[in-house]
Length: 386
Length: 235
Image (cartoon, rainbow over all chains, first blue to last red; front, side, top):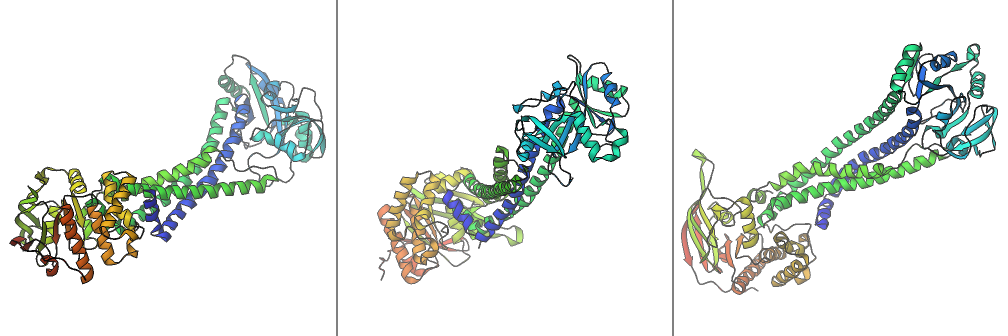
């Protein structure tokens, strides 16, 4: 049966090739974008535990991913947040990019993250060390590096690194999370602020500022209710509670999934139509043969199956080639950016198997109409066909 | 018992003014093991009759009995099964599948009968041997001559050992030498296997080899005579 199907496909080499090629292009795009989406999902997922175990208080209009007008507020706000009943700890946080050039970067940029160390224990415990220790209250000139940063700088526990011209002693290195914290260098709030003010002299007058206040809650306090209380008692802030954070994170993933679905849809329409077209032509070319088969006793279902199998095979072959090329492209692109310690694409099971299954199902569905047409041909009329 | 029998068989195309009676009340009975030739000018209803006998087409009115079974009682699915099990077809244009080799073409009806691969190949080889093409098993139809193609098609019709073989102008596209070979082959199989043959032809030479000639005109039988069949002698 297989031999027969493949020989039939081979009869019109150019046409079969073009149809398969159409599927290959769509599936290639789907695979590469799937790799991109898988990587983004990894990054977002890694950030999730951080954001869902604290309430982030940011300047009005801000979100988890930055933005908002007047992106900084006065350190006095920290005390106002602390004063809200139910708040366990509130620590100021501030971020400075490690690289001076603020060009395009994929995913999380390399950041110096400054945290108020008094009361930050609950937060810091969300990070997993691969060596050394976490930051402690009173640490000055000490840094805990994310895995990617450590690798980039060739730093180990005990070595000294240069962050924006300031030397820091590395006291700990984090385990890879495949997500944002890999690109972070954690230091004390005071150290980070000093660097921030050095590179942004404009803010000198305001002196003590913070871009985010990470807030934890006392045992038994509902973080959502607490978030509402903070929002009503502290002016000029946007409160991102765990539920909101979850929502923003999934929204972020949703956008990429929407893009992915868009590509899949285009592949579906273009690839599907071209398979339908090819199969309809094949059926009309082989009308006589179908008539002959029915005359000598082929069941309707046997003809149906034969043509469904042929179109599914077109989909499968296109899917295999497209996915294969997509994976090659992903590996090459990742290789090209590896020297910068950036991973743009991830290869997961879904990235490999998804497009192949998608292409095969697409091929099968596209074959339904032509195959039904073939199976319903009447032997007498079909045999008359020239 | 007749292998095939028709009762007031009619096939009408169109309606009203343009109504055409392609087959117009035919009563015919063919005994097991007979070799019947159906002749007549073009448009006399030969092919339509053959299609009705082979259950490829459904009559407007009347009945076709195959082995005393009234085909009017059967569903399309049952008719397909009947064709598969009891009838072999040979066509003027051979109708071999171009992507299959000679042996694979012959195997096809066995495949539809659900015969498993080993037995299928053995039986197909035997049929190929019967038509004298042992050395052409792998060749595709495009690599065979017209006469060889028709012999493959005959092997395909015979491989299931059908009770009835229906041939529509089997020699229509063949030269004299190949026509003779094909007729000789069909006669030999008719003698040896006692299969019933109904052969539609407008070649008078072909008709002389049959043991009975049914002559049609305007969808009606105008003569139905047994004859002393000429022995087939090919050069």
